[in-house]
Length: 473
Ligand code: KET
Figure (tube, rainbow, N blue to C red):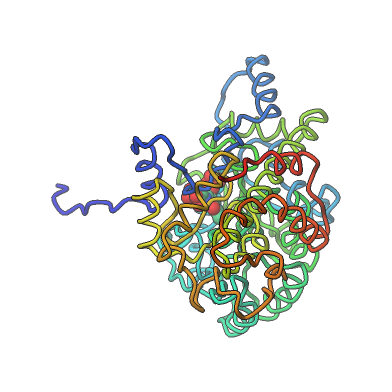
């Protein structure tokens, strides 16, 4: 019966986690999967989520099937979180939100819905994107193409090329966009770039499909939803799949949602009906515990501010680790521009390391990265950031990740256009131990440069963490 079944090559991300778990070396470093680990290297259980769960358990409520669209309170809170509580699209009944099995469930329900209702459309994803985007949409029967996105020469965005490609797409093409904290590159559109993109989406009658898996990990809950709100303000029709896996640290609970912002309440009602039917045909209805967690944390007057503070401290720790890795690499690799670590946002950065270099890091130093060169900054902590930087820099061949095509590029061209930091980070050749001793000193000017450029500061907690980050020998 199944003789013809092909072996599964394995998922590039989940397979690495298995390999990491099986690795007996005690000093191993997991920078592979997009999971936030705390300063002690543990997967945090957020107090706000713990309290929500305690309340849910204490209520000892029955566990009926949820409706196909999920928990009503959860859905209402999600719409407000995405668009802002007072958004007119919500008041007008133009937003159809369903609770889904993680945002992956939402993405997939949306993909199946679109294959039914826009059957001739093709899907366009960024180059590169999260591998699973392509798999999911192809699995729903779509042709998947890519639009230019990451500029490997600068470590930034190929915005003009992206716009040009989107301008040439057939009407009603589906354009998958990372709302913030782009996976895998960490390179996001600025607010001005979103504003410039919107007329193209509208004029070409494209369907934007936003993936918002890291809300709150970039610049803040509201800031990271800029794209969602800008599209809604512009009156566009679009989809957004959002995740609580990372922002509430509830990966295995599978908390996510899919929202369709529609042209009218009548349209939203019909879309909602077909989304329910799509869910019914796949998993029938989502998990009751997941829906209650989200509803409690977002909707409770005590838990909501707790969660926002917890999310802010996760975001700040990631930023601190960006700064720490940047400072160490800049010291260890004089002449290399690693400023991209500071301009990129969210859990990930794209190092430009080749597959062979990533393999060497794993085999020789037990440092685990995705083979594309994506590094999960949220897996770094004070105890492993120095070792990680050393592993990247230890072998000069490994360190030669540059060339024009790498974001970790030579500084000979002068100050990095992305950050303007090269003058600060340039270290004299062969001065490694002196240079290393200067890492902490360098961190402060970096912070000073960093804060005004983003328009918001780091908390005292981060500054304290930076000052206690161990010096390297
Ligand atoms: N979208 C993006 C962009 C994303 O990075 C992930 C997960 C998801 C959706 C799925 O999240 P969910 O838990 O279904 O709500 N990314 C990490 C884990 C994975 O590959 O599944 C990762 O890239 O490592």
